[in-house]
Amino acid sequence: MDAVLEYRAMVAVDIERSGGRGDVALLRIREVLLAAFREALEESGIDWQACRFHDLGDGLRIIVPASVPKTRLIHPLIHELVVRLQAHNRTAARPTRIRVRVALHAGDVWLGQSGVVVGGPLEVLARLLDARPARDALAEAPDAVAASLLVSQHFYDEAVRHGYPGIDPDTFRRVPVEVKEYTTDAWLHLPGTPAHPVGGTAPDGAARNDVVEPRRGAGPAGHSSMVNKASGHGVVYATQNGAQYIDNTGRTPR
Image (cartoon, rainbow, N blue to C red; front, side):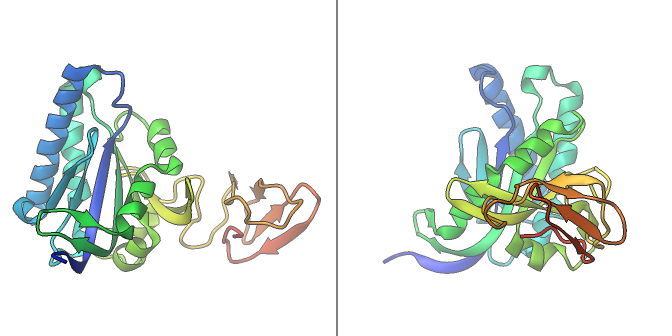
């Protein structure tokens, strides 16, 4: 067996609404995205030649060298990528404007000599890239927002929550992810938007007036999947059958 098992960080990017633009526009936006990503990697001190690159058609997946700290894939990589996409979009015609979803994960993968990469973490990365919270957040964001970022719980625990320079945990919010058979929590970030965006759990546990829909099967049978949160020092959760309880931690029930 010529494959070796190594722990690697990985990033995947998908172009929003790439279908239906026609081949000329698609070739152009692929060209722009690839150039922007290569430049962002270089500015982040990541050797493009040492990465394992996989073309996803309307996006790409990159496995970075083992020596690259995971934090570098958030800062400065995401910032460098976003500013390049924004610069392109300011002068591009609408068919060639680019907004992307980005997913980050890390784990043990098998690396073959031919460049093939195999392993469960790649499946997780693909599910994160396709997750509805990231799709919806980008679709609802102003046109000036060029990207949404979704990181796995593992990536958040090791690279985000500590508040390393250039990374503000308050700008990430926890969201439920359900894609096919895969169900988990992940952390959503919209570069350039304020901290504590509506619709997620605030890092300080403070309640906000919003509605959260937990993952299916999270509550007892007969309970509604809708949870109403009332502002205050605690959070009041009400279900349709009339049951209520107060959670002073500010966490969404799971």
